[in-house]
Image (cartoon, rainbow, N blue to C red; front, side, top):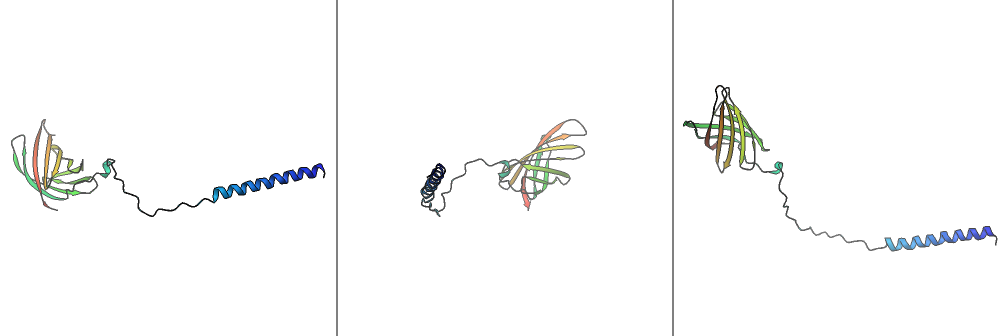
Length: 159
């Protein structure tokens, strides 16, 4: 046998040995039993994360509201509020028959809105307590100096 033939056979033996090793490794690595799939539902885990502002559930102000008011000037009377609530955290409407308002929910039962006439700027904080809407407002005079406060307790008269 010549030197060239011996070199050829050595290379051929190395290739055969590598093929045998690869086949053995493939049988070892790829012939494992397949895992079984558990079709049972996983146990429910309680979500303890705090909801984001967008996830807070808001109350619903839709409808007409009416009730008494008093203010820090000693005045009192009856008032109305007509609201359209978009269900996504904001609302708009008409207060006292002539004050256009826009507002937003702060939480499930807390809200704020503002409105303006030619002579007054109103900033209102409110809370929904069952079927009663309690409003606390500050009125700033625009034509003269001064402010005053007031409170209303309104009930829904229609939706």
